[in-house]
Amino acid sequence: MSMKKIIIANWKMNPQTAEEALRLVKGILAQRLSKNIELIIAPPFVYLDLVRKNCGREIKLAAQNISWAERGAYTGEISSLMIRNLGCDYVIIGHSERRHKMGETDEMINLKLKAAFKVGLVPVLAVGEKESNDDIIKVLTRQVKSALEGIGVSEIGRLIIAYEPVWAISTSGTGMIDTPDHALSAVLLIKKIMSNLYGSEWAADLPVLYGGSVTSENAYDFITQSGISGALVGDASLKLQDFIKIIKEAEINE
Ligand code: PGA
Image (cartoon, rainbow, N blue to C red; front, side, top):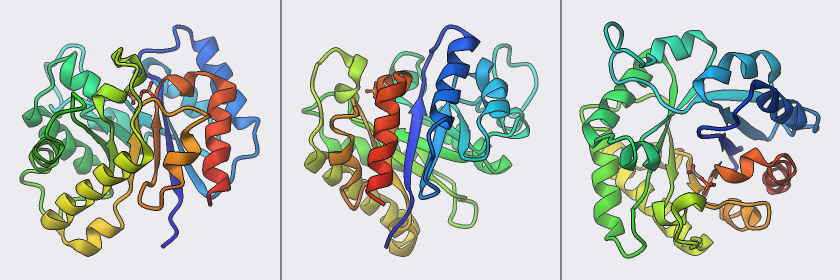
């Protein structure tokens, strides 16, 4: 089965100016983008509107986070409906930096997924073990199951899962990179867990991405694994030429 490869640029808390955000978007748009890839940019909240107005139809938008609460007295929070109303289609939920640096729990992630589905946002659920010697079966099973707890097959909308081993993220400080083989085995494990929850047909169509130190040099090796549906790219998505090369690798693969 041939599915569009998905490339997501996770800008994290960058860049520091709207001008630079615009430069990145315009630089990407200046390329002739293939219709055969799904290209998604996840800028910080403050640039979402700017990026939306300048990203054409080829690029889709993701928020990096949403509140688990629907509305009301939650100072500093942004609701799923606000994001949807702004024209976003996707939202990253459960990124390891939110889990480990901002104290997000499995329970919050579960509520955030429910909030996203409720308004028709497509969640990009990020999961992954913290240390390279962690029990990956145990960690991924817990993260996936708890995130989807109470979400029946009739409520679950379109979903993307990103496997991101925390130890392989470029800013983790380990200097370690995952191998395409290991990434693929983790992706297949996630599909197996999802198949147990929602059935094998549903899981077969579920896009599972890889993220963690994806660069223009190694992107091809990850993206071309037939079980891996694309990449969630952090650091390299802020370097225009590198990111364009990554997009091209995904296009070649189509
Ligand atoms: P990285 O980040 O590509 O800089 O490793 C990926 C991520 O954290 O989403």
